[in-house]
Length: 133
Image 1 (cartoon, rainbow, N blue to C red):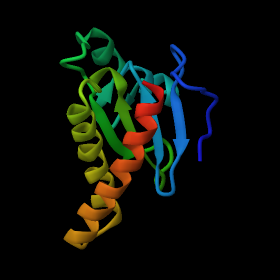
Image 2: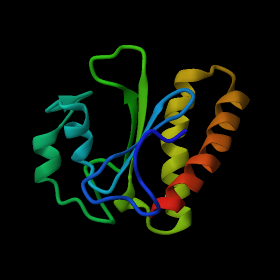
Image 3: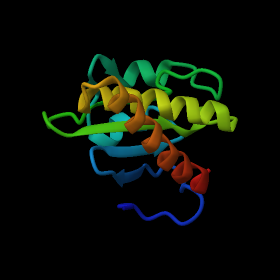
């Protein structure tokens, strides 16, 4: 279920926010926008100043992806994918799978459940990203 207004390609300076069953999926091509989205200067040990001073490129970024708790909300989680790091399909899928494994570790304890959920969810997120980049 999509909770943002986008049609086709992502709007510049607009965070794509999609409520998934177990987390909030956030997509943007600038890693620093995660801080402005949550209206915080720092969260989980990272901060906007360092992000803005970092030389964020398609090959390196302060944040390529991130899975953690939503600030000021102890129960809900987010997964952020930095779209500027989505180069080839292999790089994109690897980044998605990496972040969804973090999310899955939070949700499951059985190894097979952890891996299977992350894999199946990664297919869905990959399709979403391919529609907007």
